[in-house]
Length: 503
Length: 69
Image (tube, rainbow over all chains, first blue to last red; front, side, top):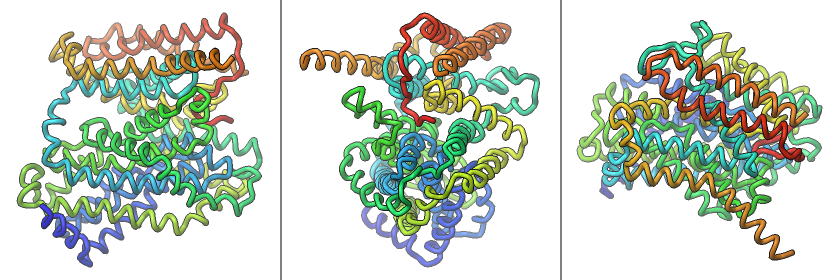
């Protein structure tokens, strides 16, 4: 085992594999920065180039590219509130709020360091879990996966706004997200649902135009109205100074970072949940660490824990997602499905052979994730001053550039003008939600989880009828969901009790 | 402004959920299962929000865990 681990490292360090990894990192770096052009799309675009490569070189290139996309996607999310990737939207909530307070450096430092920790934990999980994960994954059937989706939604809906009223609004936003996910052709019966007789809506709403509209447009309106730079009147020199503080934050909240990285790994391992879910679950978990309602109120206003959680989960999920892909040939996400195509192109068959005959190649994937993330985070820290300086650029100069990014990002998703219309509509919805004090995170999670949840609910009901509700893991997950919903009420009650004692 | 925006959103969701649920009734069960499971509770929650906004205690702006304008 140790021999294979070292062999894997040497394979990646061969000049050709290393050069391809660097090339992949450069491509992934820019893809991550550009909203709309997702990691999965780029993987698919790059797949034809690996035909003549050796397996280690090909995976160094593909995985090197893929594993840095989330890291650099965090940068635009934090600096401009424009999610560079669908998987980096959760970090906007606190990361961009910190940038607006003039703490862009600290937010980026925290996000990058947490990303690195997450990637290392994900890679370690991949290395360690390969032999033992099989029984765990196999205990999760459709009913359990449906309940897992519900738990994720309960996490975000109940924790994203304070009080019972906030929770109600959280669930409403989550419900709207689930409802929007139903738009398009129904996968079971082929019925066109809520398509308003337009061909565009037959394939459903794409996540990127919705995300960009919901999060970026209200921010742009805010920037125009304020008439200042993103960081307001904070002196430009101060903005990048907190980077080291951000790194220290990872160590201050090391246990939270590790827990969120483990959440990301687990979501990555679970087939069908996808990367966008991991960061929201981690954000929900980070929010839950607040001991009092007042402390929870600080989330969304620029609490560094809201950056650490999604940052760590976003990168750790890659290592997790590789586990079922390599071990069973079951991809955990779209990107992994494309990567699986790469395995077959190169003549490798995922399964037991990858854990025996091709074990050094498998470990070379682990090392690629580790090295690619170390190099990317290092490069980001070198560029940090220039990146954070963007938050000091006056709004009237920045807005046109961001607007171009936003609309290019929306348009490139499907090369359809209708995507731009969707962005504008959801920009208006996002603006209304912000004005009304409604949380937007549950809407996004509902949209992400909707299709998955519907599919698993249908299979559960069709296969087990009502009996799926009595499965032990389902009951445990149901109890967790109820606990998550009741926890804020319990916290508020305890807070009132404490106040009464002090009075 | 805050309450009016909230009321508008809640009414829009009520209309959306009501329309979705009624439309779903005409579909085969495979296609209508999820819309009904989501649409009916969504309608009730939106109605609760409307009633709360109209008749509930008027409080100051409660910020969501989200950034604000």
